[in-house]
Image 1 (tube, rainbow, N blue to C red):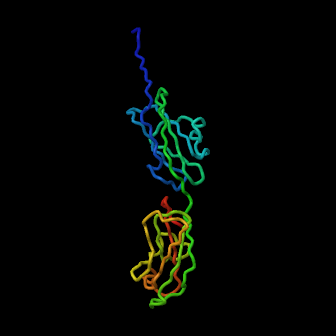
Image 2 (image 1 turned 135 degrees about the vertical axis):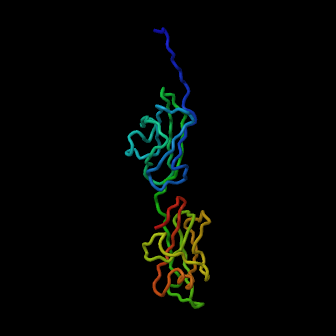
Image 3 (image 1 turned 90 degrees about the vertical axis):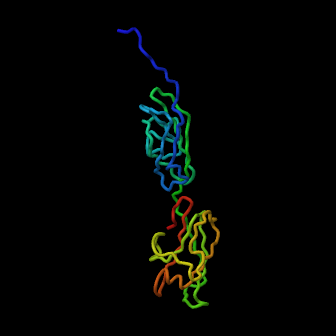
Length: 226
């Protein structure tokens, strides 16, 4: 029997730890998200990771609000995380350790949780009965939104409770104005004036009768108003 053995010393921590929330998205519209985990080590066998931050502490006992309260779990390149309740910026932190417990530097990523739909307020139109005859063929109204938004569309829809993907966009061919836009960063609580022409209204919804005209907006997180 030999009188020796080889003992390997490893004091090098995992290199370049990284965490990306929802693929690097700026916003999340629900608390439950996916995190992508990484490091540049070629062999990650028996590695572990520690995750903490702005999380719902009841979702996963190992992922908590502080580093000290969290527990090491098996390393994986993806991890589901439930953010803490309440809209706003959320930051998640990560450390990785190798099989002999060399601990990496800290990595983090932030995302803004936005679960609140934008709210549109429509003012009283200057006419609620129009025709297609010049002088009586237009109705103008103003509307505003409670938050900054990126896109809007005004549609003739089947019912007051219709969603943004129902109905037909009112065109501007005959003279309607401001029935859609996608310039981005439209200011909050600022009146926008829209004019509906009778001919355009008929194009969107054929025949005489009551028409439900509804304003929809998409906020910065990509959510459409109800």
